[in-house]
Image (cartoon, rainbow, N blue to C red; front, side, top):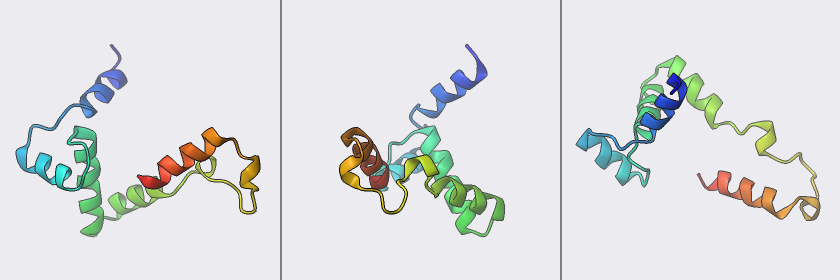
Amino acid sequence: MEEQQIIAKILKKPVEDEKLRETLEHLKLKPTYGNGILLQMVRKAAGGDLTAAKYILDTARPKEEDSLPAGTDLREVPTEELRKLAAEERR
């Protein structure tokens, strides 16, 4: 198994740290290692870490393929694409 696959698998596993798990659950997030890492990055960014802030802001910004150009006639957009965009917006 490649390292990337192993890491991806681990990031989906539940965190062992009880306090972190409770915090993630309180935020209505799955208590996974991946979500725990992202929470720590947000905390570092909020505390003034500019590298963490850049990462968080860049990651939170929608990618061009995740949005529709201004003036798009929504009647011409496939339903499945609209559902995908709506799901992304709810996150």
